[in-house]
Length: 131
View 1 (cartoon, rainbow, N blue to C red):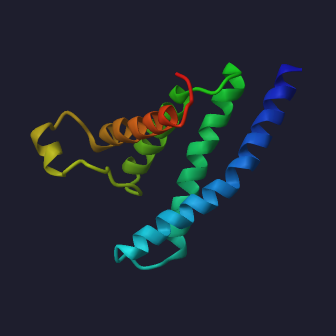
View 2 (view 1 turned 135 degrees about the horizontal axis):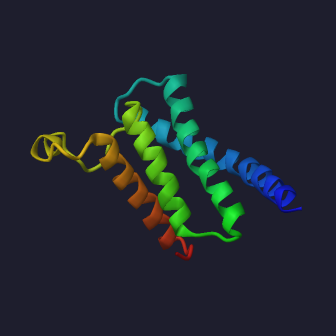
């Protein structure tokens, strides 16, 4: 019974996540093109994929806890930030490369997790999700 509920919840959550991921991925791809990057299917797919992954990581956490929480958004953002920076798909907004020379014990993936986790958590809190 409980497993059936989780499965149904995750399927519904993931299917409702797809249109928003496509929209926001298109928006971010358009912003990249406006800044001078060439329009390519790979950048569009990467943007949509990372946004879908971000939303897809939230779904099981909500199914397990039975409630929505901004902490789920922060953990999902941190995971996507870590993986994206480690694989060199994402940059770290607001962090200069010289930061890592001044503080060599902080790796770029760790900083990516902190920045993207903070962005996800703060945006969810501002949009009204409880802690």
